[in-house]
Length: 518
Ligand code: GLN
Image (cartoon, rainbow, N blue to C red; front, side, top):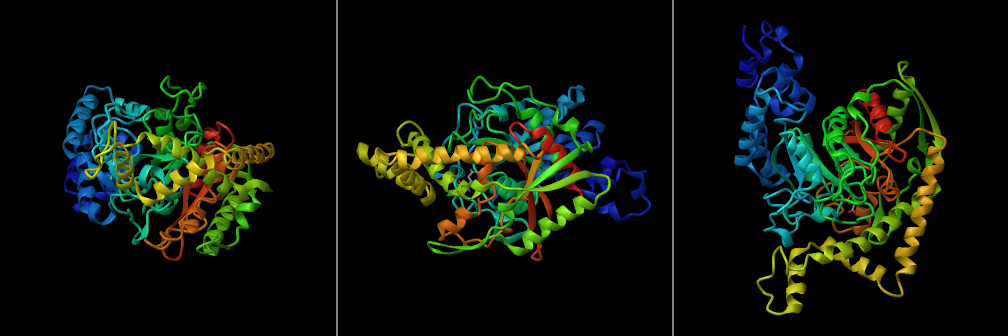
């Protein structure tokens, strides 16, 4: 009888051999190594069915084959990844394997990685090699996970299509003429295209959930303060979060267990004990799920620069069908209840005042003086700033810095930033009163599926409207997940968003695990 290892080595050429098939674990027969989930890879490594070097090579080969078309990676660390994989195999052989030991993963380029180039997908940091590493990445690598590369993203997280990267756009693996979503578009595309087993993204106002939805994977924005942001390139400090992107809810739960927790290097981290998320999945508790009526009645509207798209009918239908399927599933005790979040319509305007304001302050540190790229044309102090920033930031980042500088300036602060913060409190109150009646909220992640490359690039408002369902929960600091829930008639993935109450990731992940396969 052929060993499973041999089967894998022959790249499944034997997979159609009916005589052999029944003798092996189905999962390893059906999937290539790079297609495995964390859980499956962990089991295979544990049993010695394959090595971390095999697994890492499978991912690196996939990256090499696809990066010219998809462009999910700005940097690929082939030799260091193989060295890390070899080390992981030694750890496994010594009996000290942990859940992420030897598992290949990728990191959004707006997250610092020790001694490994981290550009934020902006030319101003083209040559930046951080002398330190983000806490969440330290935790993941301490288990022996293998870092295969850094993912392309919208520069410093600014965008919803990955077209604001200065290293080219990221194509959607389901249709190369469509965007991957953004800003963690490279991470979502890399996971969806099996170029890595999981990825770590950043979500200020949807950047994990929206690309996860466009690419058909699972992405979790944790509660604000649940995961340390130390080493995450700051965008809007009162909203920034870092979270997991994976192939299943279980993988995302596993990652949260490793990533979450208080960190002395980030004063905003929460001291609460981190729950055992992965041990609390698929529990058939009773759930009351709120359907916010404002999310299901969004109309298209006229905005400057053209007609904005409201909720796409097909997306709406797919979400409604999912709700019906969950309702009809006898093994689940889920009750749906309509709720109202009247301040939803202010979520996006509030977001697009607060974020540029905080952006304009955070991005001030990138000036071509201390680190990063200084313009070769700059010969005096003014031009060191003006030309280095002019050449190093893409248009969208410049736009945010200008809007933010305006809204923070004397005479306008109260009218814009301060007012937005007050409305933010009303949005938080909205969610509080909803969560007094229901356990979780269910909404579409995005009003539409992946749009064409270039389609919204010139229409700034239309691009901002892509965030309409993901920004309110971010403004409120709440946890939210996007889970795949089918495909539209163009074969593009649709995601449902589940929003949890404050620090409600455990309940949220449990419910997500129950409805994931339904
Ligand atoms: N589309 C949002 C924006 O451009 C997403 C930002 C984020 O979550 N990093 O601001």
